[in-house]
Length: 206
Image 1 (cartoon, rainbow, N blue to C red):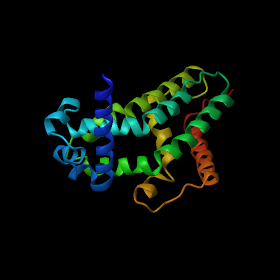
Image 2 (image 1 turned 60 degrees about the vertical axis):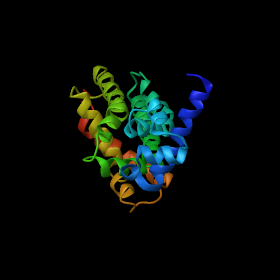
Image 3 (image 1 turned 90 degrees about the vertical axis):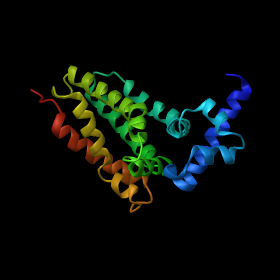
Image 4 (image 1 turned 180 degrees about the vertical axis):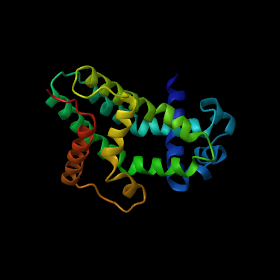
C-alpha cells in the first residue's frame, strides 16, 4: 500500500475511533465517518467494506499487539508443575489488567449492546477472543499430556480458567460498579482462581 493510501486508511481508523467513543457504534454511520473525515463515501468504501470492518481495524490497532504479547506467554512449554502454575499466574494477572482496562471494557459494552443489531459480535469473536481461547486450550492440552492436569476437554478447561480469573471483576467492571483495579487485590483474586482451577484439574499424585 502506498504511503498516501496508508495515511488515508489510518485517518479513517482514527476518525472512526473518535466517533465510536463519542456516539457509539450503533449511531455511527459510514456517512458520519466520511463527513468528519472530509471526502466521499465512495472513497471510504475503497478502504473498508463496512463499518464493522472499520471497527475491527480500530480494535486491532488499540489492543491487538497487547493481546498478542499476552497470549505469547502461553507459548511456555515446561514440564515443571511449579513453572506451569507460575505461567498461568503471570498470564492471569496481565490478562485481567488488559481486559478490564477502560478501553477494552468500553469495547465489551459496545459489543453486548449491538449483539442483536449486527454481525459485529461474531466478527469480533472470530478475529479476537476465539484465537485467544485456542491458545489457552493448547496450553491446557500440553499440561494434560505432561500429567500436570488430569485428562479432560482442554477447550472447556480453558474457558473455565478464564471464567474463574474474571469472576470477581468482570461484571462489576462492565456495570461500572468496580472502577479501579488495585494490583494487590487482583493478585489475591488470581490466587483464589488458580486454587479453584487446580482443585478441578490438578492431576492426582501417587
